[in-house]
Length: 188
Ligand code: DGI
Ligand code: FE
Ligand code: FE
Ligand code: FE
Image (tube, rainbow, N blue to C red; front, side, top):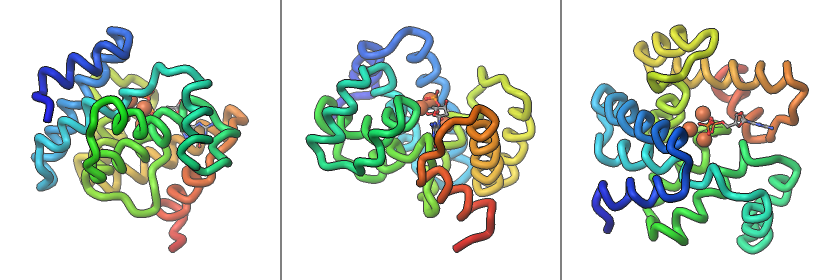
């Protein structure tokens, strides 16, 4: 297994400096949320560090992986926003030799969420949304909700994300809608 410094070096090599700094902030926020919520802080830190590892790969890379790994063909109708997590986990296995399914699942769903999310997955989902440099209308409400409970934070974020996608007229990945229905809509 790689040391933290080795992993950070591998992440940095695949990202712009700005995106790498975001990963370091998500790492730290994940560590703090883990401490507050009874999750292994080191596991959360590693997952936060790696969450956007695949963010800056080409569309062609993701399209090829969706075909080669037999992933959900509906993915082809979306783009980097959905792919870098759901498909990006394949690159973390291939290139970093990390096969811990708790880590991989949290990364797979860090953008779209899921009806059922582990505490680790909720932590990284929220850390990505509220890390210290995030600045959008509502971010302080999101931080407060997350302090109340991870579940309050998840509800806040998925409602915000669905609202944002609808305002833009962007296509909503079915799992994003399923997350909304499960956490906000009161279905299931
Ligand atoms: O990778 P980050 O920028 O740190 O943040 P992220 O992984 O949470 O979000 C990446 C993008 O994905 C964001 O611009 C919103 C977008 N997104 C999330 N759910 C959906 C989506 N885009 C589409 N088209 N459909 C979705 O369901
Ligand atoms: Fe991301
Ligand atoms: Fe996110
Ligand atoms: Fe991110």
